[in-house]
Image (cartoon, rainbow, N blue to C red; front, side, top):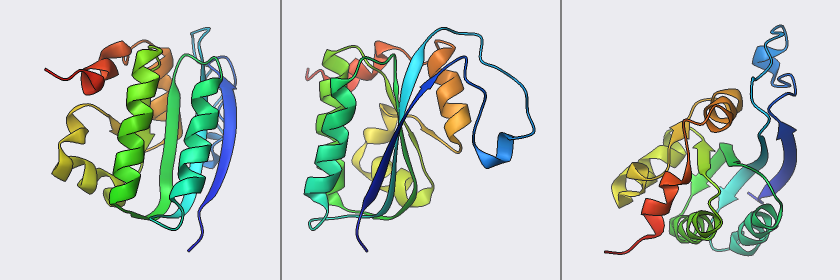
Length: 148
């Protein structure tokens, strides 16, 4: 299955646009902004270039955090893990925290490789964005980039 991507920049003051939260009027209480990069399909050898290009676009913009929405990804191969690690390292050097949204398809490979200790996985984009903008995730992702 081909990989599709979508980039959305959100301010913490923006009302939620996710379908589950459309009835909520809650606004975030932070001036921070974050980028939501959505993916759907498979992340494998054939789609690696598209995955890398989408990630590269994200780190070029000035945001306070990045949410990688992988909830619609049905396969996340080894090449995806390598590219994800590189992306998190690049973001950490810029002090940009990165969090993921995804299900077992994403969390299991992260657990097996030990990456789950450095990248938090959330169930919804709103939960991930709220955590970023309320300061619960900071440059601690830098730990992932530091080799001891």
